[in-house]
Every structure is written in C-alpha cells, then in structure tokens.
Amino acid sequence: MTDRDRAASCQGPYGGENGLEDCGDPVRFEVARHLRAPLRVCPVHLGPSLLLAAGVLWPPGIILVR
Image 1 (spheres, rainbow, N blue to C red):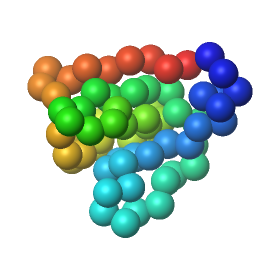
Image 2 (cartoon, helix red, strand yellow):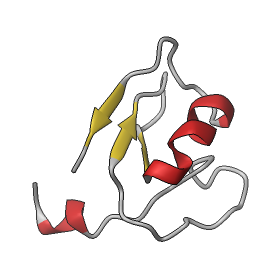
Image 3 (cartoon, one colour):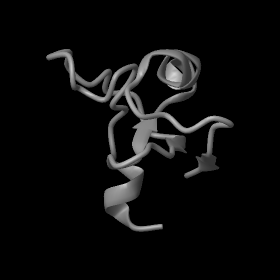
C-alpha cells in the first residue's frame, strides 16, 4: 500500500457522479463496477454504494483496501 492509498478519500455514496462531494473519510473498501473505475468508499458509505451507485456488480465484488 502506498502513501497515496492511505490518503485516499471516500467517493461515496455515489462516486461523485451526481455532483456530490467526496465525504473525506479514509477509504477502506473498493467496490467493483461494470465498465467503470472501482468505487473506493469508507465503511459508512459501503452499504449505500452497493445499493445506489451505477454499475455495481451483483453479487458485489468488495475488496478490503486497508
């Protein structure tokens, strides 16, 4: 893990696609998406990202980034 990974901010719950700002919490999970970059989120936004973000695979592919 690099310093850049440790300093990454959560993109949740929608990955910034709806004009919403990143939440600023540290990233702990990466959610795989179809034809899109993985969505990097904090624990608070993991659930909402699985339900609401575009292109999330089902069953979801979740990787612990920590």
